Length: 410
Ligand code: FIX
Ligand code: ZN
Image (cartoon, rainbow, N blue to C red; front, side):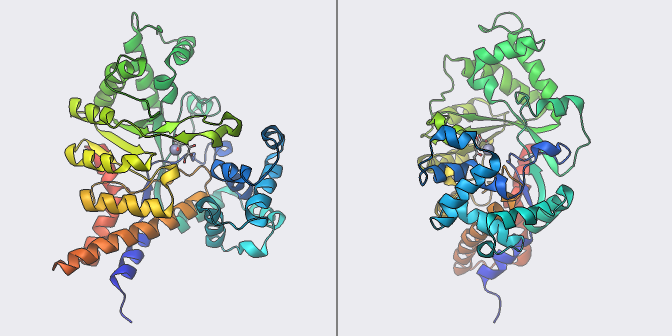
């Protein structure tokens, strides 16, 4: 049987290395921060919020338990007492499967023993190899007390792990961050007196240089507006955007997250709200010399984001973020983007927090991206434009990070 168009596209998408443009993974040289293994996968916040729906244990009791006990509770709730049909649960199955493990024949202690047999470096190579990863963009925060010391002392970088400067506290919690900056020798003032703006820019420049950062990134609540008479609006106009222009950095906005909707769930307690994309439109229109990356958490924002990208070539939509990283929504959003933007966008990032998650996140997303793309090629073929393997390879390279890399280098 000759290979179908679907099969060709699947094969070529699998063979194309991906440049994963947003993760929460760390350079292996910062060993203690790079998470991997079955316990880390089970206590991933996506699973924790699902597990709480199936457990009666009080929140505090769960959080007081050790990581292994928490993992056992999640495993029992989601894999033993119920079937693992959610996307996050299926993710664990796919990751184990790709590592050659039959999850049905192994209980948690057996899985732990299997992972304990690996040396971290060998495991990293195995995962990157199976997932066919070209590079991984980290999320690097100078405000993170665990991470910062590693950058301050310096370490020898793994060139596959590239950095992105994450600055949420600077923009969304200015008064507290102003105090923090002051303690670290930046002459800033909560009401923006004196050298405040140039000192914030000095801080941004210091960290962009220290990280050798590819872009600056922030996540924003649904209430974000720009321009507006707010600290955040002022900081963006007077510090962020000039900084990005001067240092050749794109500014990535992750829009529509409501932090701590249920604080008792800790990291699993964030929610979603519809963002006001007027703010993004205003930014793109007022600053054609700045480049913006954007992803939206709410399904309701997706169409508007794509239309905005048609209007502004300084805007690059990326990823199916978090609650939109489900097969049905990836299919919908990727099809919408292909139909309205061609290949000028980046369909997915993994958002992996645990190395093993690269396995499932990319296996699942690659398959869906290939299906969506194949349907568009079928449509082109019906209208008299058959595609060659080289053309499919070119488009796939573009979609899996090549297009974004060019956008960042513009
Ligand atoms: O803000 C972010 O980068 C989000 O991706 C995270 O805050 C979130 O916890 C996450 O891991 C989603 O996938
Ligand atoms: Zn993230």
